[in-house]
Every structure is written in C-alpha cells, then in structure tokens.
Length: 368
Image 1 (cartoon, helix red, strand yellow):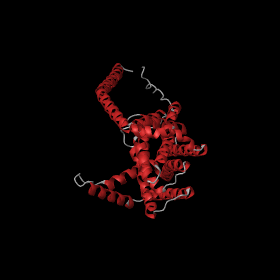
Image 2: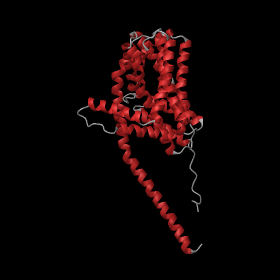
Image 3: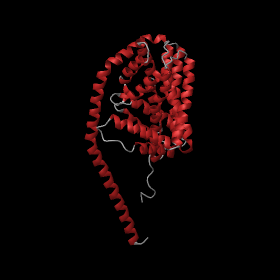
Image 4: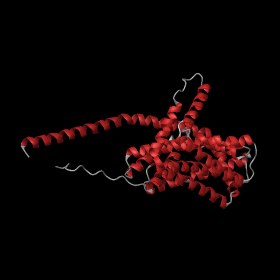
C-alpha cells in the first residue's frame, strides 16, 4: 500500500469515527431533551390513573366482594372458563405467527404473554405492551420492518372484527325471543362464527362492500357531528388499511381471519359460561352487546386494562340484559378473574421465555 493510500485509509477511518461520535452525541442530546418530556407524560398518566381508580373504586369493591359466592361455580365450570381463555391466547399466538410468516412458537408465546400482562398493569399500557412485543420479536432476530408491519396488521384485524360483532346481535334483537337453552346459544355462536368469517372474506377480497360500509359510517358520523369538520375519506382509509392487512398476510389471510373470529368467540363464550354456571340464561344477543361494550370500555386508557371501568360497565349492561344484579356482579367477577387477573402471573413466564438480544458483532476489520 502506498503512503497516499495509507493516509487516505486513515482519513476515511477518522471521518467515520467522527460521524459515529457526532451521531452518538446527537442521540445523547435527544435523550436528554426527551427525559423531562417523558417524565411529565408519566406524571400526567399517573395522575389520570389515580383519579380514575378513585372514581371506580366502589365498583371494584362491589365486584371483589362477590368472591365469597365463588362456591356457586362448580370446578367443571371453572375449568371450562380456563380452557376457553387458553383458547383465546392460542388464537392470538396463531394469528401473530401467521402475520410474522411462520416463526417459531417460543417468541410468539412469550411476547403475547408478557405484553398482555404489561398492558393490563401499566397506565396507558397498550402502547407499552406493543413496544414490549416489538422488542421481543426483534431480539428473536426478526427484521424490524416485518415486526412493525405484522403487529399493525394484527391490531387492525382484531379491532375490525370486534367492531363488527354488535351487528350479529341485530337478528336476535329483532326476533325478540329469550334463549333458555345453552345448546341453542352454542349453535347460534357457531352460526355467528361462520357469518364473521364469511363477511370478513367478502370485505377482504372485494372493494365495493367495504367502501359502501365506509360511506355509510361516514354519513352517520357527519350527521351526528354536524358542527365538526366533515369526514370525506373514510372509505379510502378503510380500503388502505384492508390492503395493508392483505399485503402482510398474503395468502394466509383466511387462516388469520378465522383465528381472529374464533378468538372473540371464545372470549364471549367465557362470559356466557360464567352466566350459565350460576344458572343465568339471558338473551345471548343482549349479552353480546354487553360484551362489546365492555371491550370498548377496556380500550379507554385511563386505568390499566380498564380496571374498574370494565367491571362497572359490564355489570350495568348485564343488568340491562335482564340478569339479576347479584348474578351480574358475580358473573363479571368470574369473567374478569379468568380474562384479566389470571393471565397476569403468566407475564413473568413470558419474560422468562423471551429470547435475549444477542450482541452485535463488531465490523470486520474495525480493529485494524
């Protein structure tokens, strides 16, 4: 190597070192600027959570006071509710694995268990849970862009299906009959599963029905909020989000749609099982509306996992569905016991199973 080449090589190394140093200094400065902002944000969330928990504390006390009546649940019914919630988790594992292109089960299971627990205990925990999932998948060696696209597609699909569930209650409301037989309710649930998958397949493969849904929803919103700026692009937004889901899932969208529909079916069945276990058989269509309302309340990020808000809202809506107030409190306690409290300890198992990030090897020739 000539002297000029050697000097040029050294100069290039010095230049790259200066650039890396500048980037590091910039990141440190950005981090320093973000610290006060992050601290203020955390304080605000803590204050909001504290006030919200104070307001819903009576509902929590009323719900937890029903634990003394847990003897009304036979071990068989409790096992049924536990297995139904295991099925809920299994559907989410399969859905995320499909979205990620068939990765190993371990990072999928650990990420879902850990992120679900964190989302249920941290104020405004939804974004924190999603960030934890992202970190676990990246630590498992998955490309960052793939993980971000997959998590976005999964969230959109899960949210879209739960938005469509209340529509399934309309035929039962119009019929006006009260289903006293759990087997009849089970048959209705199977029909509902087929309807969800069929309608979902139609919306995934054709543009006109989804655009029509968007236009109707847009018109309703604009009529309700006459003084707000009108929406004009909701159909296009729905089509763009549908296309994003399709681009991530590819040919596997049918399996993903079935897993999503079954996930909500099993969760709804947990609530029906809690009611049936204490001898309460309200109209399933009304219970479905109460279930969807509880899920909507759970997405309000003022308490961790909707704690207290869901208990109060679900109890009140079950009473409106014709459930005895005492039975409504007890059924809510049993449902939340298996869907909210029981998964929390498994978050520790998820963290223990989570793959650890590997150290990035130094660039070849960096020491020369």
